[in-house]
Image (cartoon, rainbow, N blue to C red; front, side, top):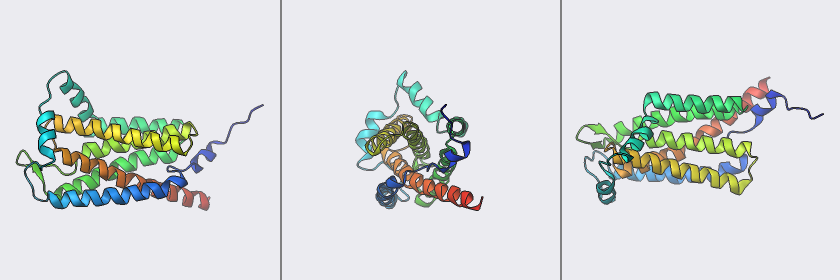
Length: 223
C-alpha cells in the first residue's frame, strides 16, 4: 500500500530551487541596475522619454472592448483586486502543501508594493501633472504573482531545470507585458514606468524567496 508523505515534509521544499538562486541573483542585479538607470534618467521628470513616445501614442486611450480587458487587468493590481488575487494564490499554495510559496506570495507582493511606493517618492516622476508614476506598482505586483505561480506549477510538476526556467520566464514576461499594456493603455503610466515595475519584481522576488527559505530552515532547526 502506498504511503503518503507527512504534511511536515512539504515545508522543507524550497520556495526557490537552490540551483536557481545564482541565475536569479544575476538577473536581480541586472534588473536593479536598469531600475537605477531609469530612475536617474527620469528623476523629477514630467514628460514621456524618447522611448515612451511611439509606444504611448499607439497604446494610449484604448477603446472597448480592449479597454474592458485593460480595466480587468488593472483591477488585479488595485488594493481590493490584488488582495483577492494574493489570497487565492496563497490559499492554493497552502492547500497544495507549499507553505513557503504561500509566504512568498504574500511577502513578495507586499515588498514590491512598498519598494515601488518608496521609489515613486524618491524619483518624483509624474504623469498628468500630479501623479507619481515610476515605477509601476501594478506591473511589479502582477509580475510577482506570475513568478510565484510559475514556481508553484514547476514544483508540482517536478519540472526539470529547463522547464522551470521556461515556465518562470514565460510567466513573468507575459504578466509584465499584460500589466504594462493595461497601465499605458489606461494612461496611468509611461511605458518606461512599467518596465521599471517589471524589473523591480525581478529584484524583489528572488531576494524574498531566499529570505523565506532561510526563515523556514531556521524554524525547522529549532524544532
